[in-house]
Image 1 (cartoon, helix red, strand yellow):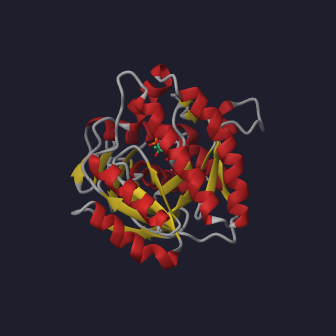
Image 2: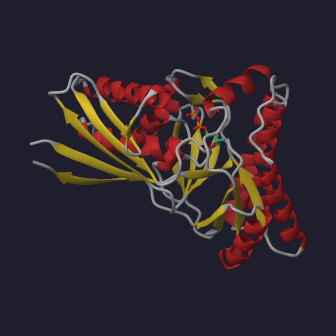
Amino acid sequence: MAVDHTAVAHPNIALIKYWGKRDEKLVIPNADSLSMTLDVFPTVTTVRVSPDERADRVTLDGAAAEGEPRQRITAFLDLVRELAGRSEAATVDTRNAVPTGAGLASSASGFAALAVAAGAAYGLDLDPTALSRLARRGSASAARSVFGGFAICYASRGISADADLNAYAEPLSVPDFDPALVIAVVNAGPKPVSSRAAMRLTVETSPLYWPWVQASRTDLAAMRTALRRGDLDEVGEIAERNALGMHATMLAARPAVRYLSPATVAVLDSVLLLRADGVSAYATMDAGPNVKVLCHPADAPRVAETVRAAAPGSAVVTARRGPGAGLRTRYQR
Ligand code: DP6
């Protein structure tokens, strides 16, 4: 009997960003990051071990995966097989609720779901920490999507001499903070440069990179305090400066990487106007033009209306904190 292992995972948005690796093969970040897992845009991934197939079959959003996406998924399956001491091929079907590769964290939800589904399919018995390490090997941001709510991803926790063991995520208990995140999808198309290539170029060529990493360490400590206090203005200010700083490192790369578009800037301006009007609203952006605005849930409708007016034609979705990655198993003949 062939068994389907289906996992669901949600994207996360970093309030303290991860940008740049110190080990590309093991996917180990240069600095710690901190995020909120969302309750929107899930990835649903089914993995079945297929002993009769000669090679992995991978379907991404209903079509056979090709090129880099396929290569990253099969390399990840190779890692799972190595850990499990097995060699059979797999059949993988993965579906994202948002366009893949548009800077909407599809690789975070994607590799978190794949880690859970493939880990189960090949019989790995991993605790959440080990699962986050495994997900990290697919995409470092995926380590955080293993957990619901807020999560911190350590670049080097120093629990072992082994760099791989030291880089993992864990949940962060933030009982007094339950914000909304208004997401303005100003452009759902694929990004011009992958985040992987852009972060490599930034680390190698941007004179602003290491100063930002340094500032990010201070930001992380301040963010933990602000989250503990449940202070949205403090959290928002730190998140916004950390994100703008990350984009500054890219703008200073040679050649420059610019993900921000005129529509992004229009939304950023509208967020400033909201603040001038007394609304606590703060922006963060990832490797793409889309803007995520942190605000009080009660203000979310007004924030959504404002950003929609600032970037006509954008899809606007309001997210809250969401669940960690998990399994849904069903049996097939
Ligand atoms: C800008 O996790 O997609 O979203 O580890 O190379 O797969 P790889 O990169 P990825 O980068 C995400 C970067 C970011 C910031 C963040 O989520 O922390």
